[in-house]
Amino acid sequence: MMGRTPDDDPAAVKRLAEPVIMKAVGVEMPKRGLAAAAADAVPDLTLTYFLLLTVGSSAQTVGQFLPSTTSWALPPFVASTQSLEFIEQGALVLDLSAKGEVVWRGVGEAQLKWELDQKQREAIVNEAVQKILERYPPKK
Image (tube, rainbow, N blue to C red; front, side):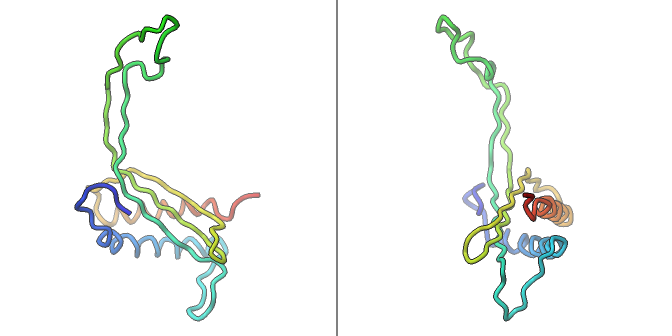
């Protein structure tokens, strides 16, 4: 799912990202005691991923950590923006489902850096999948 610009092509991003995500999951899942089901078998768990790409913002204003009014009801000064930054963000969500119900969800987020080459992006995705799946299985 992409919410950056009207010209975004989710299909093109999927063609680039899906093989990398599936390969990373294929490496990490056996480390957690899970193996891929045979082609003709019904799996105990089903993995679904969601890749969300969007733009966020971060702003700081003068006095943002002060109460909006003082005890005599006059603001100490007019709030004005001192810092404004737009950040392209991405989130990877991994859901494990059993019998149609989500039994575990892991989420990773990062700032997108489009200037990186494909190898560097793959390394970031691999690291994200590894960090997300470090929390599986859940601790009791």
